[in-house]
Each structure stands twice: as C-alpha cells, then as structure tokens.
Image (cartoon, rainbow, N blue to C red):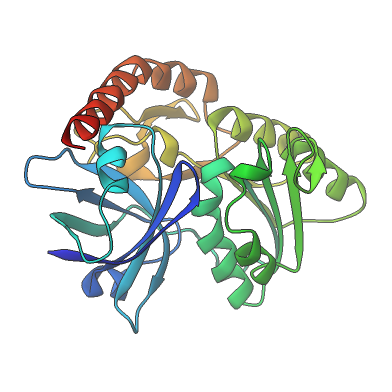
Length: 279
C-alpha cells in the first residue's frame, strides 16, 4: 500500500499529495507519469509526476478535482493509503544539451511544467518560466517556479495576478525583445498549447508539447489518447506524452477530448452525491 505522507490544497480544486513510493521515486524523471487506484474497485487514472524525492522515497502528484476518481482522491487524508501506484511510465523530458529554454504552463498544467523547469535549472540551463491562470485564486506553485527559473512571468486572464493577458502575449514579448531559445516546452490546456505552438512555428523555435491532458487509461489499450502527429497515429501514454508541437493535430485532439466531458461530469456529480449521503 502507498501511504499519503502529505496533503494540501493549492487552490479550491487542486490538491497536492506526497506518496510513499520508494521504487517509483528511485527512477522517476520529469515528464513521466504514474497510474493510481484509490481503492480495490476504483478506476485507473494517470497523473503526471509533479516532483520526487529519491532520498525520502516520495513522489508528489497534483490533481485537479474534475472527475469521480479525483473527487475520491481529494477525500483521502495523510495516513491513508492508495491501493495502486504504478510507474514511472512514459518518456522522460529530453533535457540534455539545452542552454536556454522557455517553459510555458497553463492552469494545472503548471504542475507538470514545474519538474521540467526544476531539472533544467539544476542542470545549468537558463530557464524562462511563463505561467498563466484565469485569476489570482487559481495560481499554484508560484514560489517554486521563482526558485526554478532565472526569469519568471506570471500571467492572468483578468489581471488579478502578475500581468494581464495570455501566455502567448508574454512569450511573444520575450522573443521580440531578443531572447533566443533552444526550445520551448509547453504544458497546459490543448487550446493554449495550440496557440503557443502556432506562435513558435512563426519564429522557427523547436517546441515540445505535453499531451498528458488527453490521457485516460495510461496503457494505450483504450485509445482515448490517440492523436495525429506529423500525419502518423500516436498514443500519448505510450509514445509520449511529449511530442513535436509543430506536428500535432490539436483540433483533432480537442474534438476527441470533448467526447468524454458529459460522462466525466456525470460521474463526478454521482461521486459528490455519495459523499454528501455519507456525511
């Protein structure tokens, strides 16, 4: 069993947990993910590794409470145990040889972007981090990004945190000011990544996008994370989750992702009602 050693909410709908999982922590790398089950009868869900501590044997996960399983996860407390915690899975972020990188995160995707920024920073790479949120109440990992980057730009849609505007506004401003990046790494909502990649393509800057948001089963068997990259069919969980952002068919991925929203919403509502009945 995998004990929850720390739990805290980063904002009203995003929870951080540290899990005692020494074997996973020993081999975990930024960009990879785990699959967990909250209980014996629970569904399997993939969550990207947000951080790890090899010495302590812990793996940090950050989840947004949007579905039935994340709702169950949010009701667990320190000292409780997860039934399954498998990983690390997926391909790790390629960091070797990079001297200057812009890491662009949006919303809860910043939880995935953080370990990438942290590792690059520790390797001596100059990291410019751009993080975007709808408003100040949804900001997460602010201090962590400041510590893991030489330049940190916080953006919000309504201007209540950092600068008002989109992450693409900040990235374009940096590029136009003369910043030259070996690579841009973007992680967040599909629509955000689409426009980040469209911008960097104009400037011919190599860009990697994490397709973690479309993963469901995590093994390639369900086909839910099927996408087209450079005209070829790929699966985010087994072939990625990171791909050349200039070759991804984002419109196709967004259309497929929309197919599951009603089901996810219904399952979440049923789970919330169950917890209300227990109370």
